[in-house]
Image 1 (cartoon, rainbow, N blue to C red):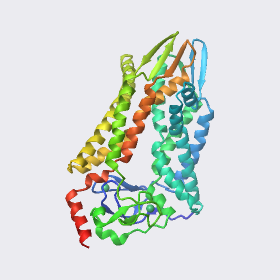
Image 2 (cartoon, protein in one colour; image 1 turned 120 degrees about the horizontal axis):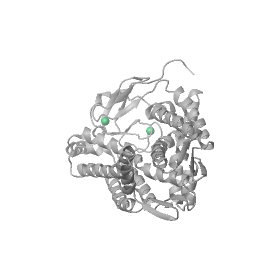
Image 3 (cartoon, protein in one colour; image 1 turned 120 degrees about the vertical axis):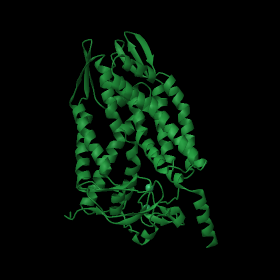
Image 4 (cartoon, rainbow, N blue to C red; image 1 turned 180 degrees about the vertical axis):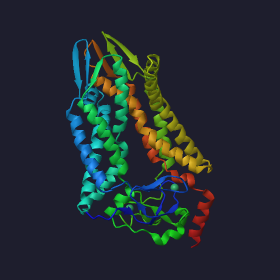
Length: 427
Ligand SMILES: [Zn+2]
Ligand SMILES: [Zn+2]
């Protein structure tokens, strides 16, 4: 390992959000660079950008295994003590015949986070030992795809919400697994936030810095005849279909972006109705069963004085999906009817939808935890309701819709486009 500090050298690239050609100066450790036009973060480097992600990923994987084997919580009720392990949140859901939901929770709560950590450890391990086998590129592509589907931080919030719910019902104590889990989340977030796509791909492929194109800085890439490779961030001529650096497929824009976005939104809106009207949780107490919807849960928490939890559930489960659907619909409307004002603000709204998407899963995770914890037969048991699956579908559909949206269309002045196209034809 060399002792020279790591850096991202001066280069020219295209902003993935507003399609402006930008001249990025040298970025040193602990610095980041944002696009002047739309305000999105383009690239950033943490301190010790090679060593820290590697060490943190190893520590996280170790803690993850500790969480897996240690008991998470213990509850006592009517003389019966039940110990819960984090894996049981999945098995309890599967046992209740919600297999699809169980598989989904397993993937985004355990499988994906672990695979992400493993991939970071392998990629950075190879960087540190100076190796660069071809299959590393495949791993890097997979990592940047998978990391947004890993929802372990959401599970942390769900754990806290379930604790508040449980305290009023039973005697509860936190076990070693829970404390390991808290430390694990800290390291996991550190790992994911310290991996920069541009930095990783700069190490993986020989990528030009395109400095001879710096004269185009500030202009729209589409008008200049250049497109960005979504994988390695290299600049490519708009005629090319294969990236000059990484060999991946190059597309000027996400295909049928608005159509796909709206299709997913409509499906999400349809699923939102059963998600809120059907019961999400069934509580059986002394032989009688009570069904409760998400809104019932909010009212119950409010009436029992747990105001913060009531607010968290209301915001995450009821407000966030509506806000997200409304933002994406209004952005599609702006593109369709050529409303190109305050684009910087609209791009920020789009970033917001990307960020808040997975937080709606909180209530589904809470139901999974409660199902795993409260299973004392007819004395007291909690089962997931039909709404849990529809709610999960709402989250997935809104995430897919935000993924299919291409914010670059917001910055596309149709008059400018026709002029550029006309120019090309006359050439
Ligand atoms: Zn930008
Ligand atoms: Zn590429």
